[in-house]
Length: 156
Image (cartoon, rainbow, N blue to C red; front, top):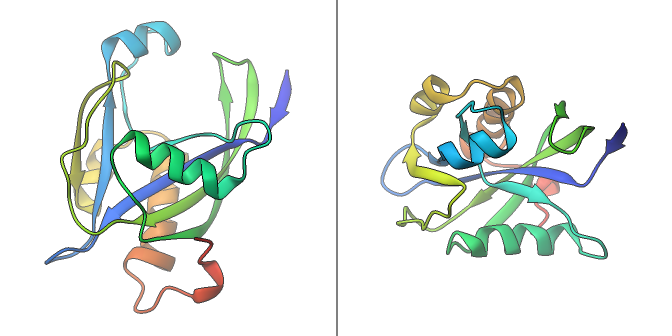
């Protein structure tokens, strides 16, 4: 077992006409059966930084897969760990937040059965994993619902 540090979470949100809404994906049954012993759950965009790839390039790559372009990306001042049974590693996951211009229909791949834009309260009802729940709270406190997100947290 190894300790891996190339994973990241990205809370994608918009603030168009009301309080922030966040992008969530629901895992497909195929993905759940393949990697999670059949367990389905809601998750956010994220991924792994590839060999020789810059972190900011990884953000742009992951968002482009959803047809989205970040206006700004911030460090959300939260990191968590979890056991990844598929890779048999402990993953250390820093959390980031990316603002987009507005809600957009997002294409889904075989990995997800549905996706949507949800308020923080709606997200809280759907999320199960501590890392996601705590990451949302940090994103709200320091970025998406802060009076002024600190410039020193902005990385893109």
